[in-house]
Image (spheres, rainbow, N blue to C red):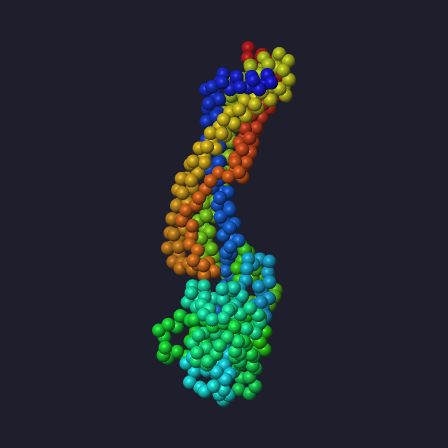
Amino acid sequence: MYIIKNAFQNVYRNKGRNLLIWLIIFIIIVTCAVSIIIKNVTSAVVNDYKSRFGTEVILSMDSKKVQKIFNQGKEARPITSKQVLDFGNSDLLQSVSYDATADVNLKNINSIGDDHNKGDTTDNLPNASLKATTNPEISNDFKTGKRKIEQGEIFKKDGDCIISEQLAKLNNLKIGDTIVVRDYSYKSPIEHQLTVTGIFIDLTMAGVTKNVAPLNNKNNDIFTTFDTLINMRFFETIGRIEPTYYLKDPTTIKEFEKELQKKGLPDYYFAKADDSAYNKIVGPVEGLSDTATGFLVSVLLLGGSILLLISTMAIRERKYEIGVLRAMGMKKFKVAIGLISEMLIITTVALFIGLCVSSIVAQPVSDKLFAEQLKYAEESNKTTSISVPSIRDNDEEPLSELKVGLDSSAVIQIICTSLILSMLASLSGVIRITKYEPIKILTERN
């Protein structure tokens, strides 16, 4: 108890010196606290965006390699549907979506803009598009309201389909009717039967009534389940799958490309991470996080060094006091406890006030730094002339502001950082002083 009481008395007795130490600790705590608060918030925001979005992967052909293959009299074959699906089985991917399409011929019914009679078997030219997707919203047109279910319901099982209201009226089709789609083989077309479960209104072709080929008329689109389409016998011949792969981390693009090559990706293909949209949203936040981290490290190194120097000088000035205590029989351990207690008292006061101040200044500091990051990002985009699409066709806009606050995690980190600094500063002086014997200290004083 005497040690603690004496520590309080010493803190008050040496007000000038301890005030300087307190001021340095206070500045370090405030700057560290602001950095930790910003870093924690930005890390949470970045992780949230990564979990929701990811980076799109684009598979493209290398034109030079393709030309070289052509000059050798060979053919650069495109990726098969089976390979497309196999490429999607990777732990590096955040998510995968597929859009499948097959241009088909309608049997016994007409398509919009088709001049042929029903059931004409002499001309099996494709006059409708059979479409499927793994997207639960079917397509962006359904999401934005350009298309919506007017009658019935969306397909729920294999073999079901939905058609446009125009196509239904043209052929007097209703819910529960069946339609037959086939490939365009002249000799023996392969046929598949679908059941109409829903009829949708299509506004995408509003105002367009003339000179539209059947395949270009979106009223001739027929939607079915993904498994239904890719399992049709003619799909491998006339069907195609457009994949959209999203990486968890854009830096793993090379690793993903090697994985695809092992699975059969031809060497004239290459994978590219389309991280422009990702960087547009996440980039400024990550930049702010890096700035906060660098600021935190700099403050700890510089502030810690200054604090260490001043506390060491302060304890050297108290050599005689320590020598008297030791000559009176006080153990080195108790002397050390007393010195550490003084530093902890100073640190505690600085910590309490520092937390209050940092909770106030963190937001304006964050706003200033974040504004600089946004300005830098905009200038970079202008310089590179990048037209950035929104991620995954979302209307998500880059963050224009970042709300920061003092949470329990930040408080714990700040307290731990403060205590570590305090212990290091006091221990350095303790080690320097207590290695001398009392007689030597008192002799040096004389």
